[in-house]
Length: 296
Image (cartoon, rainbow, N blue to C red; front, side):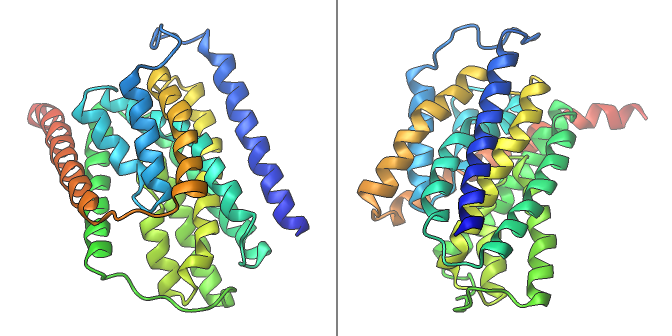
């Protein structure tokens, strides 16, 4: 229980660090983005809807990316940082809810989250320095992976999982390495829920017990990596604030009140929107890279 309390306290401290950094850099935004202080109704709606359904099992990263592109709310090169920073606090709320009732070994949980944070810190530094076209291509590839995972979940292709609450030493080593990779991918806006679910199921862990690890990893990475995106001025401030102000009520409503909904039809709609976004991002990224290649 002491380690769980430490994790929760550390999560709150990381959230506070992000808020302080975000507040401190707002006045020094050299690009002059987000001159209006409050998000629009559409930005709030995206925050509420994506985090509401994320809590019920439809990931928020791919859907938020797709909606930002569909309605042209955020420039492509700012989407990863905006999602990481904006969804950080809603994901923290989810993590606080699920970690507090976790049945998994606290030591393994803490070390797995630490591995994910390490990957996220490195990944955020790389993504914050990428060009617009490189980010478009990378996000397009990430959304293609998201589509594959969505189809796998909808058709029941995921492994059934086991009943273990503690990983064996060999399985734990594999999970540590994989979680570091998942943390790096998170900074591109590629959610860790589906790949983590597959990983822990293959390793024999009860998927329901693994959920706190997934949520905790995502929350810590979002807050820590978010600091790097804020420092690099690679976020759209109004859209990020919309994710925060809309997302937290969405999480609370889904987790504590609604709990479950018939989502089968909605998953197909999400799949179509994410597929569209993946195709357009890949096309934009490849078209942007083509002139450079032809000059060589």
